Image 1: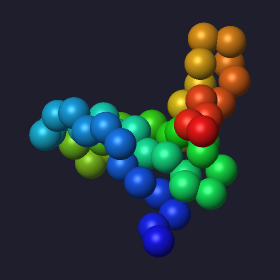
Image 2: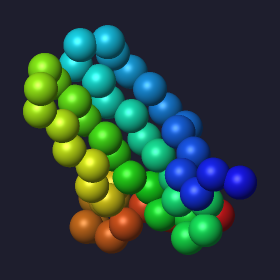
Image 3: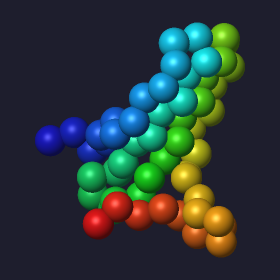
Image 4: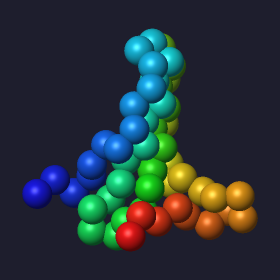
Length: 53
């Protein structure tokens, strides 16, 4: 079983994806534009991590 599962994908050159950690349920956002990319915890409006049950 893969630990991270991609649940959302948008774009080709400017890519945004949402990944879920299957062990903790924590959601992460991945963004890539050109040669730059980042992967970080997805936060709700109160600044708390988004968790998928």
